[in-house]
Length: 117
Length: 352
Image 1 (tube, each protein chain N blue to C red):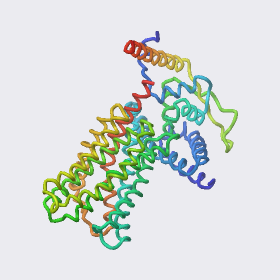
Image 2 (cartoon, helix red, strand yellow; image 1 turned 90 degrees about the vertical axis):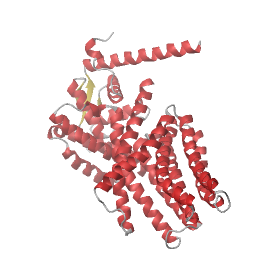
Image 3 (spheres, chains in turn yellow, blue; image 1 turned 30 degrees about the horizontal axis):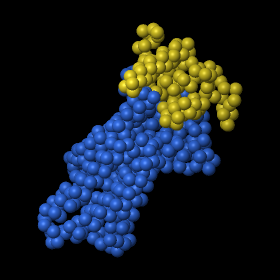
Image 4 (cartoon, chains in turn blue, purple; image 1 turned 60 degrees about the horizontal axis):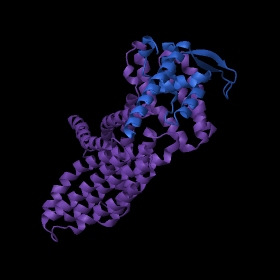
């Protein structure tokens, strides 16, 4: 069961959830996060640049993500790209949200099984 | 194409200067890099994709700009973080600009095409045809507005088609019915109808816009054919019914009820399609049908209070004023539609 401290941050907004989920597997730079969120959300969440960076700013301030350095592959113009990664706290929040969503789905399945019987 | 992309990137890099200094220093350079990559990727998928990508950026930009400045002062606006509010503000910006352009464009086309078909606005079928062509072209702009506001990358065409039809049907029926009723000028029924129509058209537009949102979100192509059928049948009926139910041929009450019946069938069709396509379709259409005329008259009340002269003799001025007066209406309508839509989409996704 997630701690009380973690639960106060839930439920996450969809945008936050997908950004954290995107960073759960590996550190990424901004554009990679945007593309990954598009894929994860089945193209329903398409970030504009300003939306992405105001969300990243908030997550950095909350301490859920941190800067992880620079991507070894620069962009086309040769400019370095900063990458982001989940902090331990961010990972715990993401896990707590996943548990919460899982319990919702379980409840929904139980009810639909009950009604179907 | 490369020069266009470079130009867009330069414009964006200037816009970033509008953000608070701390934000610029922390994210400015990264944002330029990511924006350049995003527009380059969009451009590789075609001009429409590029336009949509830039427009999305443009619509989100003012909201996030205000938000980041306010957060600099005080970390208080959690309201802006929710999905419904993001859709609501996007709706307000998009609908205000979109409605202003589409309505001004639509009025211009109707004037221009009617003149091209033979002088002043008249009552014959060439004028009706001009009205239909004008509404059809404006529907393309309406469809584009729908893409910008609500579609995802996979379904540009679907949203454009459904949004365009949703724009076309009520507008075309209104203009055609209006033209057709001119043949009955002098009869009591025509006065009653011509005074009802301006209210009815906004109820129809509100109802149909809400309905097409339901149909678009349902992603069920089966609803496309009824919409296409309605786009052909209803404008035709709007022309024919006032002609054949002329009070001289039938009792006067019959003429009135035949025309009112047509409006009722139009609304019932929107309601039926919305209910069938979306679980909260009924409330969406009721809200649109009741809300849009109220919004229209409230927003125009403000315009009247400002004593703007809308009855200008010059067509160009009329077009410009029409565009300006659509802005407050678009803001309120976009806020409401975006809020409902964002909330609905958010709750659907949360359930998944």
